[in-house]
Length: 339
Image 1: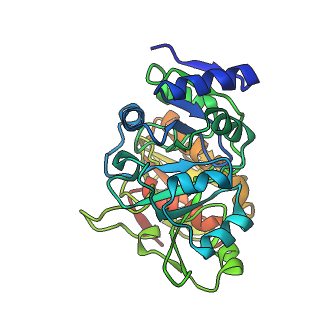
Image 2: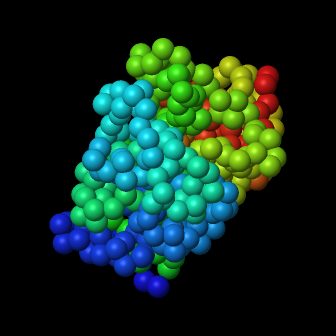
Image 3: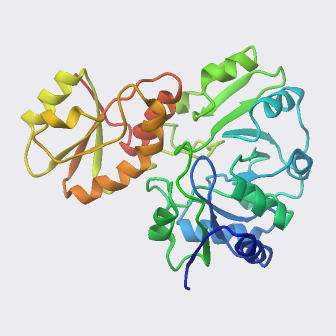
C-alpha cells in the first residue's frame, strides 16, 4: 500500500473523508498529537487501526467529535458536570468518559460500557469530522508502545505502507495526548491521564478532583485500563530510559561518572554544555509547554544517539509538568533513580 502525505486542502480533506467512509484509516493532525482515524461506528475499520498500530485489544480508543450535537450519538447520557466542562474546555485537549451509546462497537471501548470522547480544536480534524458526518475513533498515530507522533513525518515513518493517507497539519500545538477524566454521580472528577488541561485548571471548574493511582504508578497486572496511556510500557524508544530524580549538579555528576559509549542524557536546554556523553534536549527547564511540545520528538531522537541507556532529567510535577512526568515514567517503564 502506498501512503500519501497530503496538504489539507478542501479537495484532500474530501478525499480523506471518502477513505474513511469506505472503511479505511487516515492519519490526521490534532492539537495534541497525530491520530489514526476511522469511523467510530464501523467495527471493521476500527480493527484496521489496531492492526496498523499493533495495539493491544484491551486498550480503549478516544472518539472525536466536531460539534456538541454529535455527543448524543456516542454517549448514552450526559451529566450536568460534563456539560459544564465541555462548555469550558471544548474544543480542546480534554477527554471525558461517558456511558457509551449502543452505536459504539465493543472494539472502540475495549469491551467497556464507557466511551472516551473529545472535541479537538484543530481545524483540520474538525473539517474532516464534519465532512464525514461521523464521530472518528482515533488513537495516537504511532506504532504501539513507541513515542507518539507530533508531525506528519513521524506518522509516515511509523505508518508507511500501513494506511493509505496522512493529512499534514504541521506540528502539534501541545505535543502530548489529551487530559482524560472520569466523572462520578456527584460530579467529582478523577484524573486518569494528565495533559494540557491541568489538575489546577480542573479544580477551578469543579469542586473535587482526585488523581488516579495509575497516573504515577503501574496499574496492577490484569486490571482493565479505563483510559488510553495507562498501560505499563508506553511512549518508549528502543533505548532504555531511566529518570534521574536529582538536582542538576547531582544529575551531571552521576551521568558523567558513568560516561562511556553506552550512556546518553536527555536534559533541558543549556544543561548539555557540562555533559561528557551524547545528549538530546527537550526545552527550557522553566518552560513546561516547550518541554511538552518537544518530548516525543526528543524521545524519537534518542535512538539515533546509538547508546544503550539514556538518563533523563526529571520535569516538575505540577501543571503541564505532571503530564510530561507521566509520559516519561511510562517511557522509562517506571525506572526512577532518586539521588
